[in-house]
Image 1 (cartoon, rainbow, N blue to C red):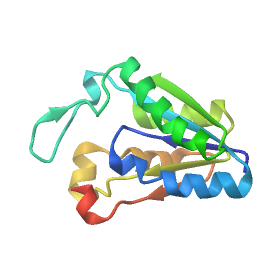
Image 2 (spheres, rainbow, N blue to C red):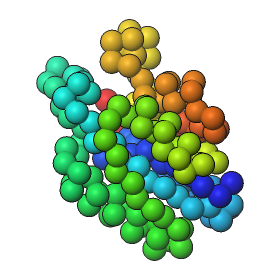
Image 3 (spheres, rainbow, N blue to C red):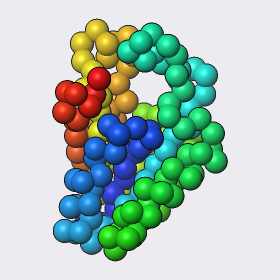
Length: 147
């Protein structure tokens, strides 16, 4: 395993994948690619309070700054890290980037929504799991963090 793709959305939940990434990168000497997808108005989704939000980082500049900060912590731990910002549907972009960089594994976190919520909102992790050509490791936060 030489290339690990890590999609992040700027939330603590998505960052829950990072401890696993650190371990895999150190064990395998793998390079980590941090990806943040900038979404459009069609990708707005309701928060638990019913308000619409556009992710945690709405501008490309903010996304790059966020990824650079995360990358700095990994680089400090001697993990070779690259950052990528792309535009579009998160699930489709993740799959395309995974193919483009020929990733050996995708490591991502999920909010753990299931059933009706997944049907109404859609699940990026579910789509990636079903369509990725590389193995996908999905982590889930403790219940109190997912709320």
